[in-house]
Amino acid sequence: MDLSALILADSRFPGGGHVHSGGLEEVIARKLVTHERDLPGFLSGRLRTAGSLAAVFAAASAHAAARGVRSGHWRLLDAELDARTPSLAQREASRAQGRGTARAGKAAWPSSMLSALLKETPRPHHPVILGALVGVAGGSPFDAAMAVAYLAISGPASAAVRLLGLDPFAVNAVVARLSLEVRDVSLRAAEVAGDDPAGLPAPGSPALDLFAEAHARHHKEEVRLFAS
Image (cartoon, rainbow, N blue to C red; front, side, top):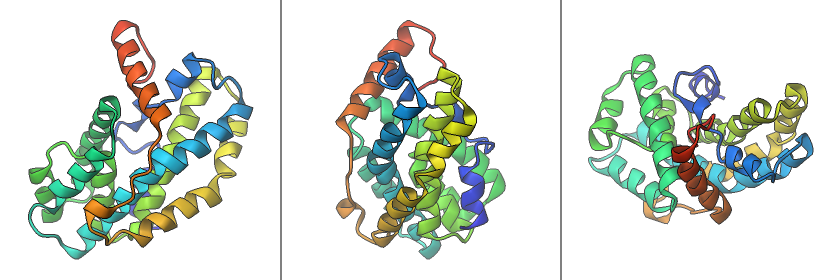
């Protein structure tokens, strides 16, 4: 796995991902996850839906960045991901993370390709900018997919420790046991990285969409630990 992808998947990367729970805060508020034994099902489901969608677009973005793209491609890629994200709250969360990742990424991997992307899409979706950064740095579509697929489960897992006071060793073990699923999702994403953006897969989860919208409403009414 390319070093750029490892850096971007690191919780210490200053992209703002630590303020997002991936829907887990709302799920916990509804007492649907209360213990470590509840985490595998939630994380696996999130990986196969929202995580898979993010992996597909990160891989496509890395492919585009590595090969050079025509004007308008970044806008198209971003719009196609927007169309596959029915929840406004999830779209806003993705763009917030994308903005933070872009700021840090410009300092680490400055390039004309990155400048062109941000000119076309000043507030890019997180998978699009992350994939582009991996591609600019020399990583592969698979590397980019692995980074976002891992983030799809590591973020909520970290949130579970903070929200429920779970044993971090046990939670880390849950994430580790999903390694083959992360690899499978990433391989599938890399296989379609060069496809027309309009034809890319569109896995989704209506439940996560509804939880995201509910969290956004509650976040306006009361203090929540996470932005999403």
